[in-house]
Length: 315
Image (cartoon, rainbow, N blue to C red; front, top):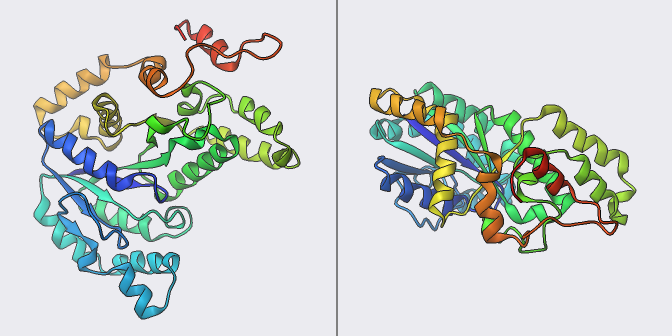
């Protein structure tokens, strides 16, 4: 079996993504089942093959144990970890299905607590090959400080969960909801030279006093050099197809057991590479104001234009 572990902060669009990806994969001919592992999610827009609410719910935990929502979610995941036989018995009936795991949004579950990591490790022992799809809200790109926090959260999650990771900027149609981007979209998706972002951050009087801390955080992300993003609009078929290809390579579906799929998929990987500009061109044209390169007051071109010229692509 193959599948996706859909994770991300609250409000990043995990449930909407599971619904959209389920419909998209069904349309391309895959047999898909969605597993809800979020004990706080009591309004599901999709048909659920396995629902953790049959085992435990956040509401019951909060009422009976007098815990808050954060402590309750941690308790629920630890309870699931102790009762994995319940999950195993239900997954056995889904042999041959492509699985989408809709997970809770509490960040601490993926950065500090070990329950999710242990659950995922056990699922993989049941011969289910997973990739983590980590959604973060794309409008954070319009704020340098918030984008750095997104980078750190994504990096910490990648190291803690220990799965092949595809980081996603979700709701890319709202990417400039809270302000115009300082750089082109590829700067954020590819997490290019963060010194430009650091320079921009130092202009803010609030962050200027924390110069050394900012430099240390940016240096940490660059030293690992693991974080990059795929831009996603769930309503856009091309965007969904591009993400599906990335996830298929991450979880190994592209090199699956079926000989026909194996040959076709490997050929697709070999000849289907896209230049980075092509990957984000539609995002830039549809959802940002970047009709041309910005210039500084001195007339100097910005990072985006210099980068495009180096790559010899139109901007």
